[in-house]
Amino acid sequence: MHVEVSTPSESLRVVLADDHAFFRDGLARILSSAGIEVVAQVSNGEAAVQAAVEHAPDVVVMDLRMPGLSGLEATRQLHQRAPACRVLVLTVSESEADVIDAVVAGATGYVLKDGPLEDVIAAVHAVATGHALISPRIASILLGRVRDEATVDAPLPDVELSGRELDVLRLLAEGRANAEIGEALFISHSTVRNHISSILMKLHVSNRVQAAVRAVRDRML
Image (spheres, rainbow, N blue to C red):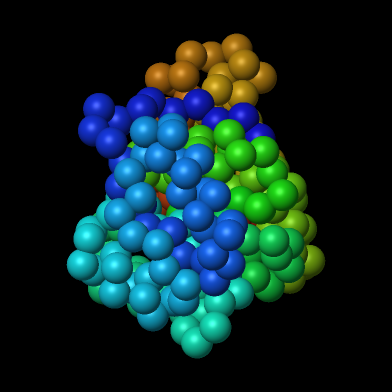
């Protein structure tokens, strides 16, 4: 996964929620060395919600499997109690159900712990700047599940996308970053962003993950 996003002028502030202290401490050091401020480290979902409400971070990096309140339920609560805070799920789980449940609960990103560390840093920046992000491997799992569940006789949506917007949407659904979409279609980054904004507006969704899910569910691709 290759992600290019603009780096905010101020340091990003994150909360880390993971019940494995060794992993959590190591990730905190890596993020800090990349200029990302770790404002709190917690070991369960309840503490993650409390820390997010108290510190108002840009991103909560959330594991799913934690004792007590799960990362999934904590994500649901954060979506209600701290809607300005974005959730990046960082987990070992490639379960279809976990991916879909996390997105529905309000997670803006979903990446795997076995990926390169630089991808985690890039994902934090991407999510903080408003980009919904899932790794290509997770994108294929998510969209495969949606395709399987889509009914053959489902009505086609009354949405008119241009040919170029459909091209962008198809690549977006594959988990491609904006830079990769631009390279594939020979268009500028700003043009890609404009197309994605138009797609989100026409589909009445708030982020690219939801756009991809709707496009596949409604057989637009």
